[in-house]
Length: 217
Image 1 (cartoon, rainbow, N blue to C red):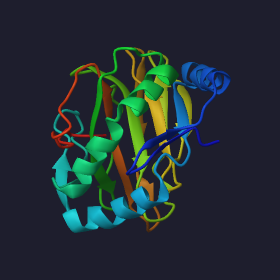
Image 2: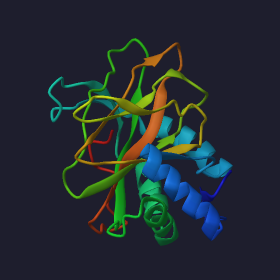
Image 3: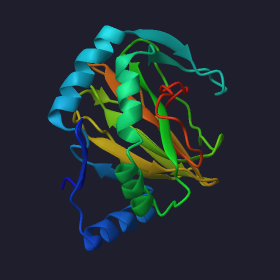
Image 4: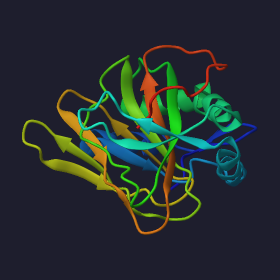
C-alpha cells in the first residue's frame, strides 16, 4: 500500500492514524519498513535520465576496514533535486511518525551505483556517527536487479533479523540504526547495476542548497 509519495509539486501522504501505527509497529518489530512507490513516476523517470547525464566516479569507503568500492554520483542536478525532495517537512514528519524519532531534522545522502562483477562490495557497519538516526534507500535502477539484498543483524549474536531485496524501481526501504544493529547490502548479481539514492535522517538541520555530499551507503 502506498502511503507517501515524493513529487515535484508536492509530497503526497495518504495514511490514516491506524495505518501509521501499524507501520510504526512493523518498523519496531523488523527494524525496517518498505515504502512502495515513494517516487512519483515523473520523478523516477527524471532521476534515471539525470544520473546518467551527471555521471559517476569511483568511491572507496575508507571508514570501513575492508575499504569496499562502488560508484558515487558526481555533484549535479540529480543530487540537488533529491536533497530538496527528501527534506520536505511533510516527509520528514512522516518519517518521525513511523520511526518514533522526534529528533529527525534533515536527510542527507548520495546516489551511488554497484555494478555486478566489478568488485563493488559492502561490509557490516552501523553508521552511528554525525547524528545519524535512520537510513533511507530509494531504488533508482532502470530495471529489477539480482542480488543487492539488504541485511540487518543483531549484536552480539550476529543473527540476521531482516532481509529484503528492494528490486522495484521507485520503491524505498526505511530502516533503523542502533548500538545493537549492523547492516550491509550483498553484492549485485546478473547484468543489471544497482543504483540507489541512500543516506541518513539526522538530528541536524541542513540548508536545502547543500548537495548530497556524504559518503552514502
